View 1 (cartoon, rainbow, N blue to C red):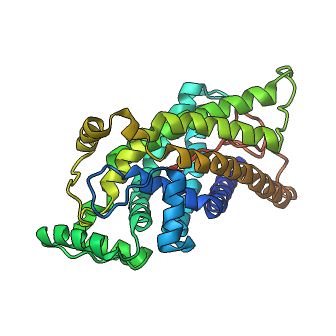
View 2 (cartoon, rainbow, N blue to C red):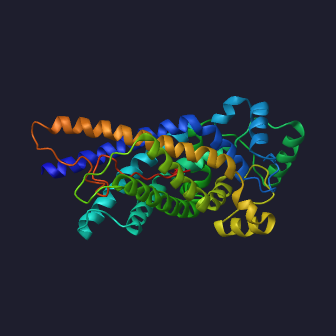
Length: 364
């Protein structure tokens, strides 16, 4: 009973630490996400979407035309989505790993099973958070009133489709209107590439992260010696390295998702109906380069974000585990503080993210 209570408490600690850590990273790095999203949807088929030359040009134009606050468009759903994604992902990932360890009667999972655990957690979180990330994408792409010439062109295209463009008035308004105008199906646009992104990104990132952390903690130690507690610098380096590997590998899925999730009533001359159509048209019009638009600001965001999030997670989790151990000391004998992460034998649970996803996003 005491062991079960400790396991449940550790899972709650994983969830709380994950949610807090994800939100901290979003606050610092959201502008990079806005620039990345705007570059991702530049396919040359939308009258209402400016054609930025590069990330620096995009940032300069966004600030000049819409004000610096526009760099924080979509912040509310980003914070909500990140908190929910990280909290759920950490908790589910650790629970799944613990279950696999018990089922296999092993103290540590192999890289393949770590990837499988991360993929399972990613799929569950993706189903939960796709509506939030959809709203974030649309708010980030939503601009201030266009110039008269551009507005006339967009208005003509929208009028031809029998629609009137009405901007969303924040997160709640977007959630309500998407449901009313597009139905339940509208909330899950881009779900296919999101599932691919969540499962593969998390699997690659945290298999690499777990292995780096395990090897470093066991380096130069015999099987009878306890794991070495890793420092902040090492954890940050491992987090950034694993995130870089996963981000470059899975980035095309992000581009496909963003193009599917953008509003299709903004004067576009090309409307995407499926992920396969996005892939086919992008390849025909832009080639391989089209699948990596916005990669620069994406890496500038996700690498420090991963380092900040995982570093915050590790330290918050240690504090929570220490508090849990102190409160349990009078009634229970000391026990390992992180049974959900048996590969390390310490408080350093091996987290996973969306995203994200994501998120991410998270893998986002």
